[in-house]
Length: 233
Image (cartoon, rainbow, N blue to C red):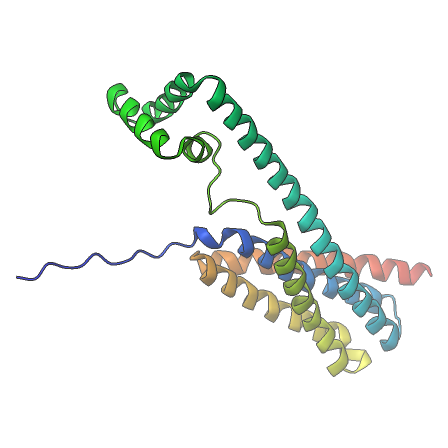
């Protein structure tokens, strides 16, 4: 009788770094550009002005997203490096205490004191800093900050997302710009929710509902503000 071979498990946590930046970039590109277009259109501007505003929003938004992601994720990376440097120094200064500290962490997770001590010693014999980084600091290969990856993913997906409502402006006559942009945005947000859920292994309905609701709210508020400004001006 043949034994069944273990099947490789599929996990999605390894995608969390670029997926978060990509989804945020695409969502921000769709919502911010569509909201800007709807707000300008509600102020009774011509189609040329709407397109200029949309293109300016795409370019400035993509650059802002890239810079913001790079700076924020770099700050996270700097913090991780500082923690690792501090932990490395502590390992050099008081190695026995670090063994006890790691063993205590394993005890809180359910191991007996003797087994926790054995596990801590064996893991630290192989890679002391790696063991403390993972189990004390919560730093691992999966969660390590990657500034360039986050900046690139955010900028590219922002540009793609922002291009969708702009295409609707180009295709629609002036009198139908707002309805066309709203429909294109809702379709885009729905597609983004589905793609994000599938890439992350999450529930599709909840993901789509969340993305569409907040995107629609942002457009409605911006359109209201644009209408008020247009009425005053």
